[in-house]
Length: 279
Image (cartoon, rainbow, N blue to C red; front, top):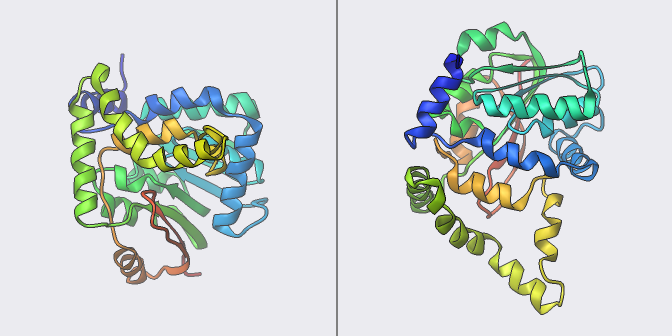
């Protein structure tokens, strides 16, 4: 019998309201290597400005593939991971088993960032990490507010949220809605134009340099992820919400959190924020 979460997620995916993130991550797992894990560890260190997480508790909201939970665990943190998508929960359990075995200091749960009682049940954490997740919940501002619930005194909240690019963001929402309503056998026709838009210039440069696909093969240098997995994740990612840096800053400022770090860029990916809770 399907669990309530599996049933709800399946219904939303089937209706085109939600992208199957977990199924996409499942395809990615076969390519996880020690090199990718090292890159993931480096990205966590760079974002948090902490060389070690030894002695710290780490909550991964929307753990997806489990790669960054693994990175945090290998950096010394005691980790709790959860995801709404049961397939993502299974991915994280799989990566834990493969690289950490029966690790008593890493628990993996199914749950929602919108479930206040669930979040309260988890306890308090030194670091709450949610990279590129809360804008996919269907209620981003509630999810952002809820992310404070498990945040301990003086703790760090590290999030990544899509930037509000006005008309461009609205057009991407339309692409995502079309992709999720398109039968799977025909989705490749939507993916290829986006692939060329995102990676075409690099393809051409590498070809001119007589190093075809060099950038594509080296894509793992960006947080340890896979280029093709990220293309599918980007095109399919529903629900989809955006926010300007000013809106995110003001939202947490009135709630007493101080911005420690903001990383912006002109690409399509999320902007990164690190806030600190009051002591």
